Length: 128
Image (tube, rainbow, N blue to C red; front, side):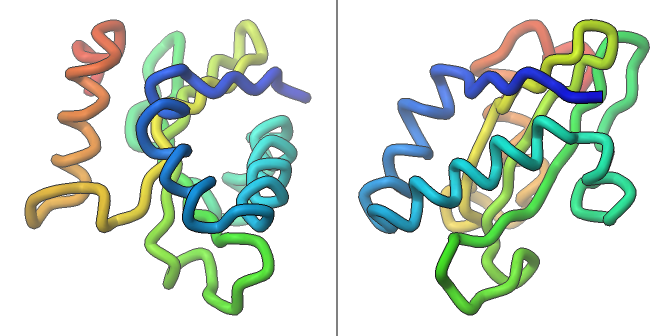
């Protein structure tokens, strides 16, 4: 199944701007790779690139890792993550958050990004 990929305005305004400034043209290529991966989101689970956080009736919330194009750092070691919402019924992937571990305050990364999602996406508050 091929999914439509939508980057939510919140993640574009906040974290993607930082990646674009820091990595310039490498970020454009990275974004293309992310879009391609998310279009085929089901494959991410076969390759263990994505981790399911919540699998409700309507939506699956997942965390994925990514590397910046042209760098030698692996996906895992990069500390770069995406939080996506996969809607199988409508074949849409919403990219809720694109961040680096340094963007998340506090000692617990998962609690940090969950709080960001709850604060900025009320419709996911009840399932996280």
